[in-house]
Amino acid sequence: MNLTDPRPCSCPAPCPVHGLPHERLDAWRVALDLDREVVALLRRVPRGHAWLADQAARAAGSASVNLAEAMGRRGADRARTLRIAAGSVFEVAAANELLGHRRAGADPARARVRSLCGRLSALITGLIRRAEGGGAGSP
Image (cartoon, rainbow, N blue to C red):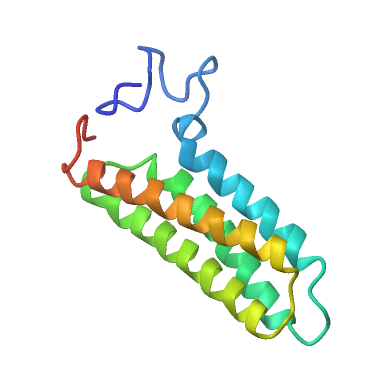
């Protein structure tokens, strides 16, 4: 993929063959995995923790939609939107940790969420650097 142009071809965007720009990102697939894991974890959260479950669910969704939105932007605007996505990932990680402190989620499920948060954060950081002109093939 040519990182100066999110399209790998000369097709008009969105390309019906190659999909939307965000769909080609590893970060997008990890964001979807994170959302899936958060939803699965929250199905087993006991009563009394609804506010925290809601916060985690909204943050996981926000990370995904802001990542997708960022790919429709350029330069500093893309970097800003990616930072919002990264902030949502950190919010998921914090909610996940709080669920653990309250013994409100299964440890293996929380470990998977934590791992995905770390991976997604690293991927988004790389996208931010490229958007700011700090990486090869900056948009």
